[in-house]
Picture (cartoon, rainbow, N blue to C red):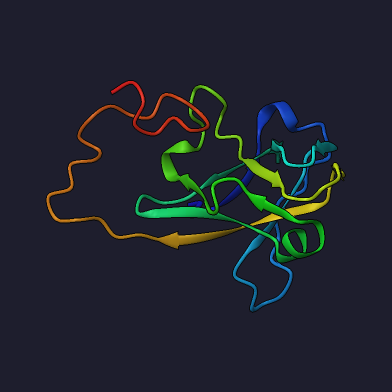
Length: 152
């Protein structure tokens, strides 16, 4: 039985996408790469495709964080500070759970991100719920990126 990990999105299978890896035994994060070249305009934001989706158990989440080298060396940051990938995002009908990294360029010059460049790291974490939580009693996720709570 598969517990948690990454898979390549169907439309990206023939595009030389690498599954994320931890770089050392003590690393918490799995490095995610850009799936294609992307130009990040100075002061602008771009959704960078990874070609990946993540599967995990109920009660778990994948958090996305900017790699420190991207933040410090290139003045990039995640638009939402920390990305949250819920377990039910995997294989959703809209985009198959494709993980996109929302990057903001705080620099004064455009930045060219190259395919295969490690842009973010993903960390699988358990989470807790509140007493009398009723999530899961309603409809299932139907949308893709940014769809939690829509259409209910």
